[in-house]
Amino acid sequence: MTIKNLLKKTDHRPWKLPDHDWKFYQEWNNAIFLHWQVEISALKKFVPNDLEIDLFEGKPWVSIVAFSMENIRPKNLPAFSPISNFDEINIRTYVKANGKTGVYFLSIEGGKKLSCKVAKGISELPYRYSRMQRTPYTYLSSNPEYKDQLKINHDTGMATSNKSDLDKWLTERYALFQDTEKYINEFEIHHIEWPLQQIQISKLELHYPRFNDLLSQKPDKTHFSKGVRVLAWNKTPLR
Image (cartoon, rainbow, N blue to C red; front, side, top):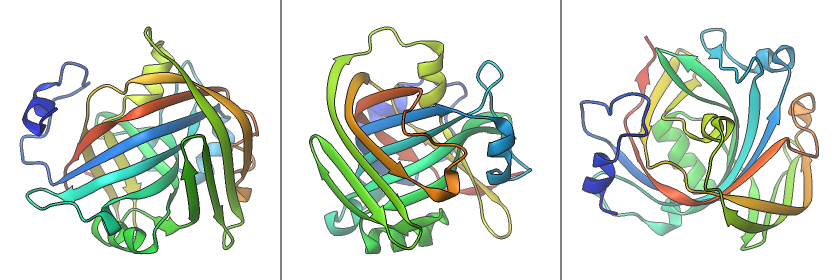
């Protein structure tokens, strides 16, 4: 699909595309989604007061998304694979701000030091480096500084033909809100609706000490996706 055609596919979006040009292209490929329903009292201490925690049927959710970031590049420039391609794990929750529903990162890790440095410098997102290894059936990550560890053995299943309201609520998000020392940034993104598949997880070991009250060893819901092509707009301070 060309970028021109991608920009035409907007029927699934909850609001219109921004009226100015996108700035970055990227691909989020072979994504593993692990989702937990959590208690709002445990989540509130991780989310800035300026953001409203979004709820599904009265409950908040937290997700781990482990995927391969590929071909990330500025508009009108080519990708440079030593920086543009890396594995990423983010832990996110779901929020509302500025009349939009979006995500907020509790944690974001990348598998290349240089990629993390460049991404953090450009976006101000709190990227940090973790050692990562990935095969078609495994995803491994460790961070000695934070004592974080994730191990997933998995296989993929059939396509999800009839998505539930919760499936869409957890995956179809077209804004990101993230705090810095001075303000909260808003990022607009665009992609087609995630093509989802079932995933069979044969082994899951996760250890994120800061999030012991949010993440258990068995997620409440899982998804897999071969991925989406993504356009992202420049960050803007939240008003």
